[in-house]
Length: 463
Ligand code: PFF
Image (cartoon, rainbow, N blue to C red; front, side):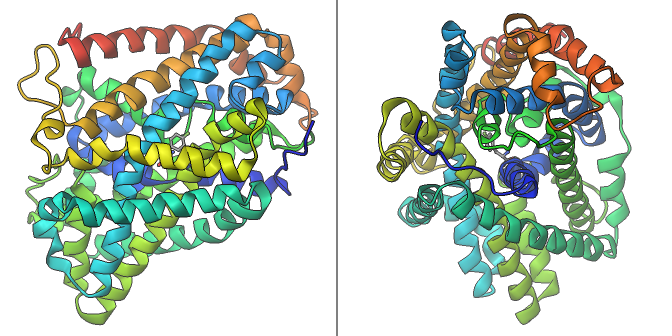
């Protein structure tokens, strides 16, 4: 077998996987999902998903990857279950879809660096015009995709690991500073209350499906990204503790990002909390306003730095998204990494063009599809998000768990997890993971998958 490369250290893997997990999903997606999902009740459901259901799926993905040393498709072949490689193929499709729209949002964030640098805080009031300027934002997206491709072409330890190690801690520092700032503003507490005091009367099927999709998306699960990263992990790494650290980091950063945004909204709405359900534009509208209140050069410096770091967080995620199809092609089709990278990246950029046009520029893609029973049409970008994040990822998670529990068999999972973790066998966590992959995750995720499809696309809401 050709030398596939690998992470140079335990910390390198954790940082890269956490880098994959922490991205736009945490800082852009999580606050807007919380806003649309009615606040703290969404947060509670989201946390339950992350720790109870997603964590076991994460452990399983990494174990399958490390055992097989293969990409998301080849892993199932290697373990001797060729038919199951359909799960990997679905994952690759999902990665391609996600990256196609993710790159569009990353392009917006990239463009905001320049807007903030010149102190254009007023862009908050012109966001809808900004995103219809498709040649400009399309060019930003192109640069972003090219940067992603460049990092991936450098391979595992040279590119992905190095970038993640440096940038993740810096981002955390800046967000925490902004949390402290936003908490000092007037009416900040109205935002904190909305965010942290649950009102379960807000809860319905939609909130639960979105929380599930958000949990999988944010943790980079259900599409083989962590099978792929797991394939570069050393045999003496402790998978369970690594996965725990990755989950805690990801959830922690999402929670902190919420603590940054909602007090700001409290401040801007004078405590009325009227503007929280704004949707995908939330941070692109809220944050510039707040950098504007800092004002002057300092506001511009903070704003510019923030969007630079957001782009880096997005980059460590886009890199992992691109790595999934690339490692498949490199392993299975014997194409050179550098060639595979540019080919796939170019293709995904093209697939993303309807998502770019569907934000007001093209009538057709902006009102792409009206689901059965829905009052209004859904734009292309949101449609892809519903298909990939909310539907395919949980389905992938369900199948991966079922595979480990019943096809590959628990004993093999246990053996793999015990490597690098001497006390694993016989521990409580072993018993829990066995139960989760065999029963809990397949049943709960399978049921919710069916309910999500019925509720989202066919207007049949069973609760
Ligand atoms: N977890 C990333 C985020 O929250 O931004 C998005 C993502 C990356 C999803 C990699 C899936 C994936 F495989």
